[in-house]
Length: 70
Image: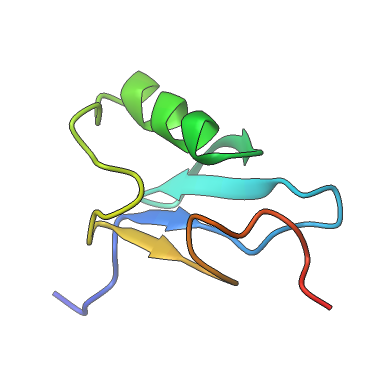
């Protein structure tokens, strides 16, 4: 394994949303950790702790960042 994580939460967009992908497939645009959790639940990953799981790669800031940093 290359160390790549199967769940990626992208950088915040200007709208404040972050794109959520699982294994490269886009699940949606999240505006908070609840949205990320719901996307993962719908993908069958309901046991993932969104804020602490090592399966999630947070780009552009962790689960507390939802706006573009200037």
